[in-house]
Amino acid sequence: MPEKGKNGVENGGDHKVEGNESGRMRTAETLLRLLPMGLCVAALVVMLKNSQTNDFGSLSYSDLGAFKYLVHANGICAGYSLLSAVAVAAVPWPYTLSRAWTFFLLDQLLTYLILAAGAASAEVVYLAYKGDTAITWSAACGSYGGFCHKAMASVIISFVVVTCYVALALISSYRLFTKFEPPIAALSSSNGAVSEVSAFHA
Image (cartoon, rainbow, N blue to C red):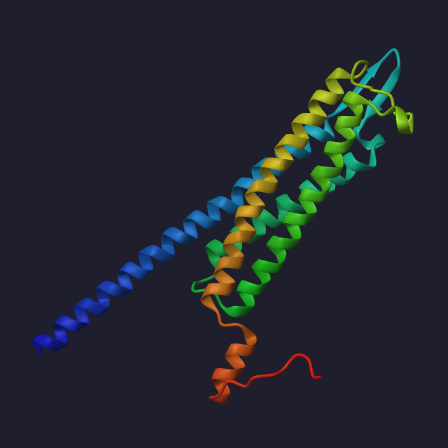
């Protein structure tokens, strides 16, 4: 009986340690998913309020397709960050295979979405500052300095969001490919044998 009680205490201690680790991981991932939401909202608000009127005319973010794309991308990422943080905090652990795949695919998709929007907007900001005589695009920031400063601030914040999403994509990919077996390996183990398939035949 003492032996059994000792093992019971040890097993209980192991489960407690695993529970504490899962709780810390859940809290850390939830916070990491909430961080991009605040940054996306900040970048979105800065760009939405970005307009300037002077003797040369009026200029607004809505006049440029890249900036409208950036606003929409930040809005989508903010919504996804909130929903994914709620999912991580509310849904019981451990991760299932379908849940791991869902987070992996969506994290990848949102990473590329905000990266593309930030890159397109950064190119427009560069042209606004430097101009390009080859395409007859003159520098506009000399006349619309305030507009350019706000646009640059929004783009910089968006690239900080990109780094957050890259980290989330790495976490979700690490979880998927380390916690679960590849489909071929899983099928082979269920059949009890590993079959070798040649890719090419002479």
